[in-house]
Image (tube, rainbow, N blue to C red; front, side, top):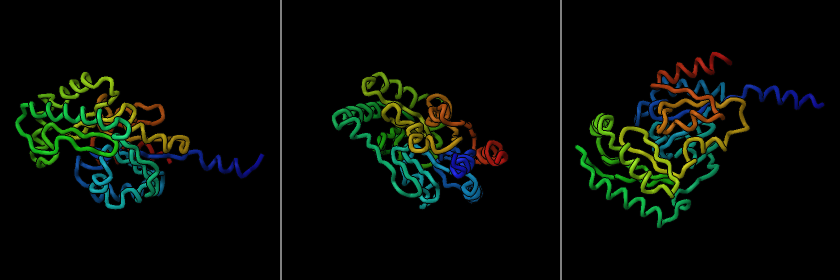
Length: 257
């Protein structure tokens, strides 16, 4: 019996990973993290391992969490972990286009554009389909609308269910593609192969930690935090705002260290 392995085991016990969604959890949606949150996260990183898992691409996550985000955090998973970074180095990039193939991808994009063209909604702008490394992001109003138009669409959609109806049509139309449609944020939904939700990132961290805590706001069914929140591999926490995130991290992790 080697005492040093027992010692190593003891040290490993209590290894905690705190994983965070970005929008609505660390920041007000699409806004930058404020100084209070930056200070809180810097302090948290001294005590436990911290990771970020966002549906957005790296450029958008950097805009919100800082230019060095993938270096600041031990783990950063953009596009749900389809782009996976550890200590600033890329672990793996997974491609939606390679997975689906160009022919199927074009069928899907063409159908979406025709559907949007026939939509009767108060405002339309541009960029209805944003092609990302690991997914399509679809916005009925178009991504380059103003913040005011974005807020207005979110209110309109809450009643009219534009995104929800569109998702139902696409699910029926492209059933054999085995895609998941996930409504997130204010104006759009993501389309990706089933299983490429936020649980995708767990393959890079499972087995490394005794506890993986996940904090996110869209943990309801259909929300983009749902699958990772429900996963038996995580301890899920539903938050309502950045302030609430700090409160829950303090209660669930910091007060127990």
